[in-house]
Amino acid sequence: MTAAVKVTVIYYSATGHVADIAHEMAETAEKAGAEVRLRRVRELAPQAVVESHPAWAAHAAASAEVPVAEAEDVLWADAVLMGSPTRFGNISAQLKQFIDTLGGAWRKGELADKVYSGFTSTGSPHGGNESTLLALMHSFHHFGGIVVAPGFTHPDKFVDGNPYGTAHHDAGGTAPVGEITRNAARVQAERVVRLAQAVVAVSDGSR
Ligand SMILES: Cc1cc2nc3c(=O)[nH]c(=O)nc-3n(C[C@H](O)[C@H](O)[C@H](O)COP(=O)(O)O)c2cc1C
Figure 1 (tube, protein in one colour):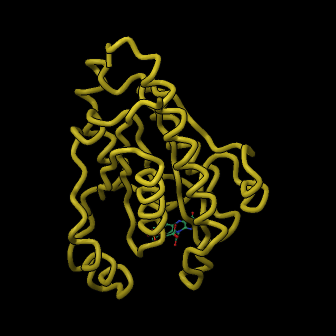
Figure 2: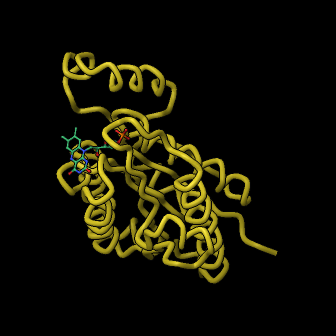
């Protein structure tokens, strides 16, 4: 018998690509038997700036129903999948600000011993997807997290080719999230659920 696990998918997305990956991962984790929370982080950009960019404004309106992430969503989970678009090769300020709200929980050791894994989207194929995923992992290490990367653990990973996490590139906003990225997202979410089940199964109840 496998242990029931709780998975939170937390993301920032301005124009919807990272959100698409987040939805795919949440659905996959649920199908794999996990209890799932899907959360977006709070927007920090001024409303006028969001509204000046049609794709950004459209996505903001379309995702209004997704609950905003709180620290408790991380504390609740056995596994956390976090995603952000690349911003100059790094994670977005919006996701970083959310991570910074976790300082109190970090100090109490409440972020440790959970499974963490990351995903991203870039404008160009070599525009910083790996550096963004690795930047995200810096925080996971500080948490005392169990960092789960997809590696090349499934035939689909030899197609998308990114062992650090799911990474789409949107070709300057012209390429929607397609099957290659969705397959990578499914492989990663299934692996996260499987490994979180293993961690929960051997846990002594201290988490
Ligand atoms: C301020 C800013 C910085 C960006 N920096 C990069 C970058 O360094 N490399 C890159 O390939 N794309 C970059 N992009 C493009 C986005 O990362 C890319 O379009 C991403 O797919 C958007 O994801 P989203 O649709 O979930 O918001 C940048 C976009 C913005 C607005």
